[in-house]
Length: 308
Image (cartoon, rainbow, N blue to C red; front, side):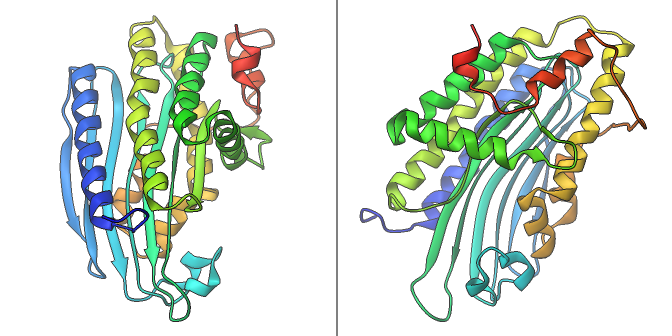
């Protein structure tokens, strides 16, 4: 492969291997359940492998999906940010995961890495990478948040250093923002899209680093919190806060909207939703409680500067 030459086959091979490695690591950590695989084909072109672990010892539900889809004409609704691509032949490959732990002291998490290419009728072919990972705690632990962001910064180090980390951290804070609630979805991480300015090799290299760095960021947090004691109060708060996750994914998430608008497989797109969730009208946590403490974490902060 020449320097900077787009190679969707190399991306696909990496992503399939990444799905395998993450599933193996989560099964080993959970110890109580295994992933089931649902291989599927898309009539318009492509398919994927949806893997879901249910009712494990650590994870109530963990979904890791690989998809490779495409078509002869990108729907206009799916190209709102780039209207010049409407009707163009396109391909998209990606791995996306969401883990919903059983213990309320273990944060929910999301990771996605993806590649898109299209060939408009006029002009050069278009391609870009996107992805990132973010953390959604219910009972935040400062040491966990510091570790999460230290790994995020180390992932960025060879690919632009502190400037890359700050830019993609800020993008994450802005993207995972529930505007109607006035709060972030969690404590952030990294998010990026439309990445191509450094050429294919560098953009692919950074995307590989994000995908591979996810387990380094998340697994130590799970190991530290999975056996923490909790009761019905914590469980009910976890289920209530999961409602925010549903709100974001169904109202704002571009990946969900793109998948549905482009005729994706609905069951695989919505496997990110939690298996159990609740809403409560007018809920307010008790002042000074552990539940009330969460609000201070649901805003953009310079975690590595502020936390000890």
